Length: 544
Image (cartoon, rainbow, N blue to C red; front, side, top):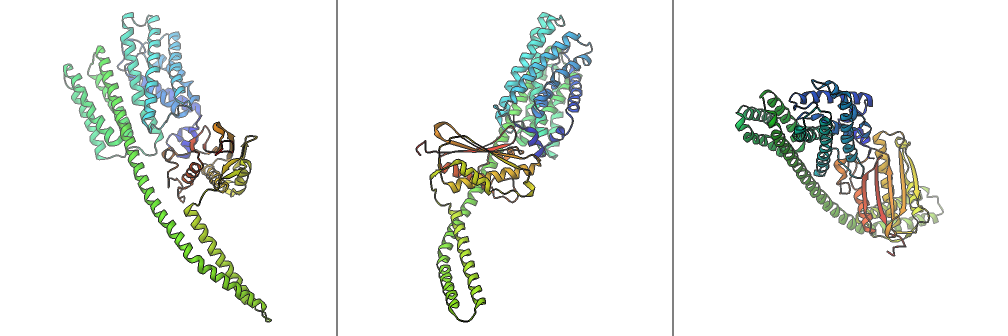
């Protein structure tokens, strides 16, 4: 499974502070928070014991596992059991409380375990609409199943009347869904963002507008409350458009708190709670959807700006390449002539009967410097122009071995161990050996630098090669470092995308172009224990 702990610590996210605490301390803090928010929700309880129309505790349960991992699922059984014993004015019977806590733990534990499956690649930072599209349906199904089972348990225990089963179950289901849609996104964003909302006059105005809306809606008679409830959409949508998902999640929490308080002190009838719940869940889903769309639009705009900057830099690079090519062509001829004349001078001096050591040494240095200048110019020209591929059969084992031999780690990365895992009887790969070696060298060095930056004392890099379908070989470089930053993972192969202060951001982009020039593809991903970059190469078996 993806190592969220390493990424959080490496990126210095707020949730990293939680990882430094003992798991038992985190679990006990969760139980205390669960009981507190459950008690707050119980202030406007439904007639049934242990059933509340607003259940932020469910959202807290989802956030705990999604942020900290599956090892915290057992606390989802403990927290509702403790809450069931101390929160209701009439504590539940022990057997009912135990069975109810088990149902909740199974339901919500299964839902969060599903969301944290590596195959789903659920984004805890909610950076995309896909993450919300995974969270909301899974939460809806799990809370519905738990509501049906829990209310059936209450009915079987004669704690609610048979005619109250359906309305009570519906109210409890929507209340739990509100808890997930309001509390869970807020906590996920709160603990996965380095920087949240910056206080401003506009934010203060939004808070005042929200308070005024609560006062306006619940200050009217019961007849107009439902009609005026849609006034809540104005500040929520305003917040979503102006501040994206980060702002609207905080706005929804404030709206929920205001709504719970107003309903508690305005004497709302129990029969009207379901209607208010339905309006609140629609408001929450609308705000989250708009916030997610706004965030994607902002990322798209930022990506377009980065692409434009990359194109401008590429144009300058192309100009520099043309200039270097012309420069090399123009100065190579006089440099060659100078080198030849200098060699003639050296030969003439050597034939003299007198000792012209000084003249001979000066001539030798001149020749060396001229040759060196010509080589530098030639290398610059080849680098910028990228040359052409020399596609010949190569031994994959030899290419990997030579690439590793060229990687010399300094003392800062001396704890990094490089391993190889090459499949037996691999057919020769058809490639430009020099280019593929350079790609491997860059990937290995980048992995070592990432491990060193993450402060791991047991750094490990694995270079593997295996035969896949269509007779191609997949070469993969894996490490146990902190992984790629999600902010740049989506644009990792874009030119000039880098997190290094001194880097050009060309490493993965050049590796990507090299892989494509060989008829393959480059894949960049975060794995269960670090990062991995892989690419495919043709073999003599493919006939390419």
